[in-house]
Length: 132
Image 1 (cartoon, rainbow, N blue to C red):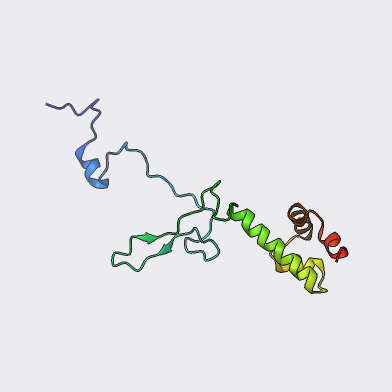
Image 2 (cartoon, one colour):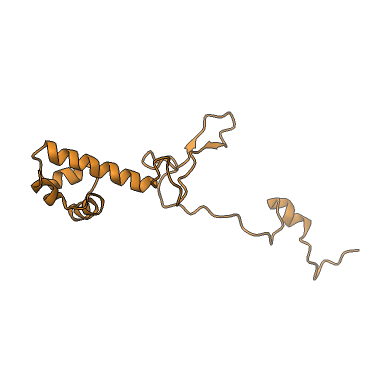
């Protein structure tokens, strides 16, 4: 015989309403950066599946920190190198301003562009252009 007061077992009514005991731990919350789950600018985001149930999602595997690409570089290092290589090509082949070139290769801040350029190429964009 069960005593209703002081019992650690939940009342059957509470369990039936939610399908879980009332004192069960809450579900894990999904804290996102505010970006849409289908943001095309973020390849690691989920995209809806066309499955019949509609409840499953196809996802691309996220890039794990510290994982190297087949190039031997991290994804960020690879993209940075490609941007600076493209900037060097534009500096050689055009008379466009260094600010325009920095913007074209993806840097919004000219100072940051110059800083990254120097770290990768060993000289500033101005010094690179002067040496041509």
